[in-house]
Image (cartoon, rainbow, N blue to C red; front, side):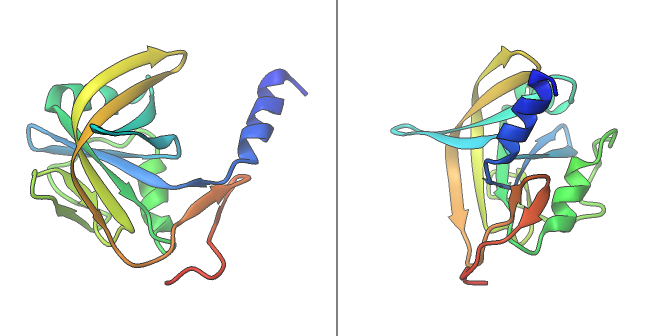
Amino acid sequence: MSLTDDFKAALGSWASGVSVVTTNHDGLLYGLTVSSFSSLSLDPPLVLVCLNNGNRLPEMIDASGGFAVSILNRDQEDASNYFARPNREPTRGFTEIDGEWTESKVPVVKGALASIVCEHRNSIEQGTHTIVVGEVVEARANEGAPLLYWRRGYRGVEGGDS
């Protein structure tokens, strides 16, 4: 095996929550499933997401000035799969997945376990990805259990409250 294969196998051992990053630029909605999402700071409240440079989302976030992160509920594998599908085009509204608008007019996945709306603060290209930092302007949490991704498959949390 190559170092790349070993690296992928090692990273696959890290269970991560599944989230969808979305933005609205000039009336066009677009989103992407990501596992590289993290809190960064409490004061000020900052989060970061890592997005592939080959995707249109980093440029759309830069142009729109903001984005949202929907942390998916255990029963939202369909939403994760939809936003992970390559070569999708931005849409004028919610099409195949139910969505809703935040107070800041940013789209989020309807029924998500949590959603966080951010103003774009900074983007840093590193390797094949762009690290996008956002300052949190809205946050909401709902009841349920998270959708997890581990070793190339979806998982749930035993004893979750959904």
